[in-house]
Image 1 (cartoon, helix red, strand yellow):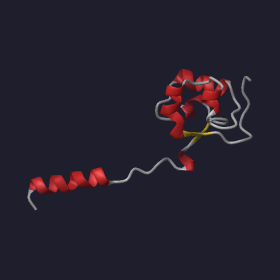
Image 2 (image 1 turned 180 degrees about the vertical axis):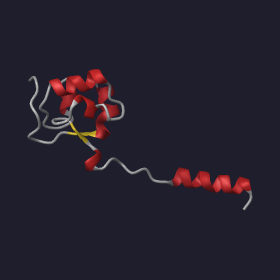
Image 3 (image 1 turned 90 degrees about the vertical axis):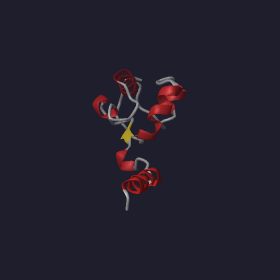
Length: 93
């Protein structure tokens, strides 16, 4: 196989490779995670992580926007990396 064809085949393989969504084990629980754990979520910043911890507990992750904890733009960045399990940790509310 010539080099150009090998590169093309490799490129097609990269493009066609499916990207697996974060599984439940990879999701960070809004009600239990520390600020450091929340910082592992793509798109998260320290000030937003601190607000999330301060305003716990959450019934669903949508509470973040509905209760004004984060902006809609921040929610769009972090929504695929977080979950809100019931019976989570306490907070400032």
